[in-house]
Image (cartoon, rainbow, N blue to C red; front, top):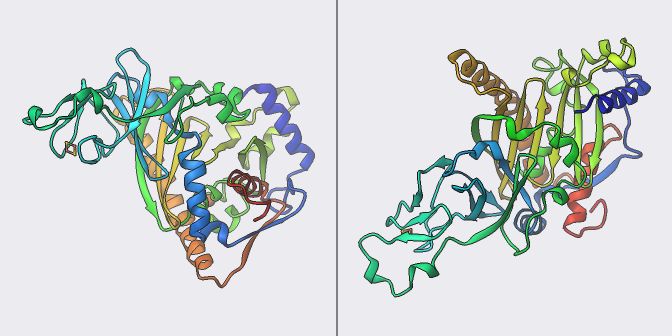
Length: 386
Ligand code: FES
Ligand SMILES: [Fe+2]
């Protein structure tokens, strides 16, 4: 983040007069209630799946994850399996990740091939550009010409080191439009120069929005994370802004208070911050001191969600020491969220699904939650707060 922007954000923080954890910083004008159905209504979930995850552009991943020709990443866009593949000329194509013969999944997980993808069922083989090359042992058994059976293309675009895809619709994806004003700040991170370290997937019995809720307020740090991260982080005080529908929530280390003691021109925010861009609907990009995380959320059902967590580093992890360091970093990250945040969110989902609790309330110190849920409701055509 540019230095002048950091100084401006620290000025706002200073004006709010953060006093460790005693006083909340109310950045929303009023608290807002959302009905429990926000999370548990299957009809609403179908609308979100269709409008946000199938028809809308979704962040698939980072360009640097698939630098080499033949490298590919897979994703689920509202139930549609897709695959984005780096071409020989460096461009990117994306397809429905389903074999044109009888519907098997072509590539079950991220990977790299030399020149073609082969279906695990009967061996049909497709080029990187999606053309059907070979129907082994059965060329004469199909009256349909091979050129009529390429992989089904989907719209894909990459810019600022980010890859966006869309499962439905024929028009191109406009990355800057999808980023809705966040593009210049995200471009400054030079994400294309980062190096993919590792991606791990987990699945949770909860609505997809509860995963993102986890990252949208710092209020819970003092209680839920009392023994893990609270000693290091400020609770009640996070810096909230938004770009179109996308909230940006900056969590703050306690060390930021020392920064406020310095003359303004010498201050830096980034070493004391966890800067989180929630890209509606599926993505969370977090910049944290020496690395970047990408969390991709894939709703599998109204109460079932897959989460892929990736770590990207500024330098490639080429030594055992570096690999051990980043593995431990990912272990800690998934340990805190996997033991403390997401099990609690599963509990919330079950409680709201019981029907015994009519609504949730977001306070004035939870502006990210208010913004996010208002944006999602608006996108699927619901009146505010519905
Ligand atoms: S389903 Fe892929 S080759 Fe038969
Ligand atoms: Fe948390």
